[in-house]
Length: 287
Image (tube, rainbow, N blue to C red; front, side):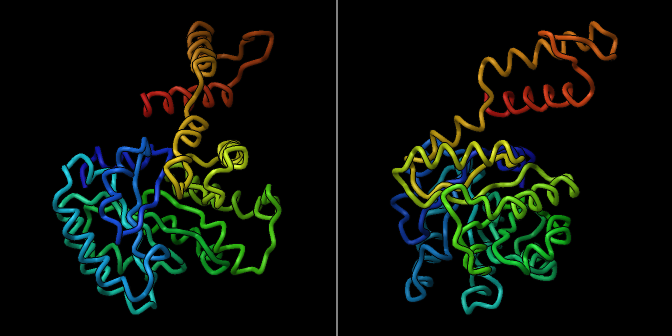
């Protein structure tokens, strides 16, 4: 995988799912404004349709322009399912043809990630999906696994694994989300990808969920419908006001010779400067 492919996935704000057995939707998903597209061989495809979906994916992928391939991730079927090994064989071929990465569902063991990494080769990035208590228990090992670029959080599957009945704000999952963000930071990964908002037309819920993700240290969100993409991108894009503030902070920091200073009546020290630097970096990634 090229450095540009790494950078595209590491800085992506929105990841839009499209079923693998709907190849006519691939181009539409890529044109939706989503920074990255996840072609789904797992939940979106029934067991009976999985062999056909693999064949459809292979045929359609060969027709895609190389720049589009660098924005594509495939979510494979989990380790222990009867579909896993055939997925691995296909993903090795697609990665050699420019596929950017693989999302590994139900990620729970380093050995499982190592198997995928070996099958796809060093060119492909891995995005482990944390969807269970077992995955949370192994999260530091997973985050430091081979070719892991970002962690992702499967909020709905995690609730099901624990038997939770979360409210609209998913307050019950606050410590879990923090654990995902902390693990990503300890492993020096790009900020993780938050889970889905099930209501495809509920823009108020989407905005609330995405704002929570941004405040909580996530850098992106999974989308299940093209209508969700614009709102997610907007939330993870620094506003002109925020970029102006960050530029003024760094200019004043340089003028102060690196010491503490006052800007707009507020003390600015090293942590605030780092926030300004991150804000400008985010702006540059999406410019």
